[in-house]
Image (tube, rainbow, N blue to C red; front, top):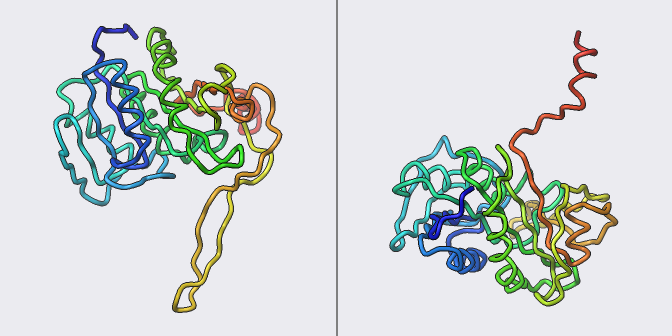
Length: 258
């Protein structure tokens, strides 16, 4: 990607138009350009993954100049932004800053990453950003860590060609900005325990209902993974690819089928 003096940047997220992480990302984008467009969901869409709304109409609401909310998923927001809202395609899509980490298997659930994925589908360099929390025992989000470190990192990434079909997943560690121990290029990790928890409750009428959530227990991930990096207070930068084909398995499957 060629860096322009004033690149057009689309900012979106999955936590909704009123999310504090979106405000953080808008301020980050403002350090890079003054041509910023915001198109984000009306309400939280965490866990929406790469879903597209097909059975309900989409409602587009203009909040102010170059700032819009859509009653739909993060993918809906990017499609509408690129096909309907923006006068021309942007030079960069920034998604986040997500409330919580998007690591390991999270990447398949994440609406934050899905928005960056959709930007990549359109051939636009796209970056997903997430602020980890709960990994060091505190539930307080350190938004200022992402805000302080993101501009320089994005600036470096903007000056390079990542390759076709590649999007960037950035996770900031759960620590103060001054305690960040550098940046690491990582692979998508895998948790060594099941972090998804089911909270079973009973409503006022005696009927069962359930909440899905994620535990905050520390595991022992491998070196070089995204999860290990944030455990070690490093910023994790993981290149992801739209092509999910497992090429190493193709030869074995051909032998099996043929």
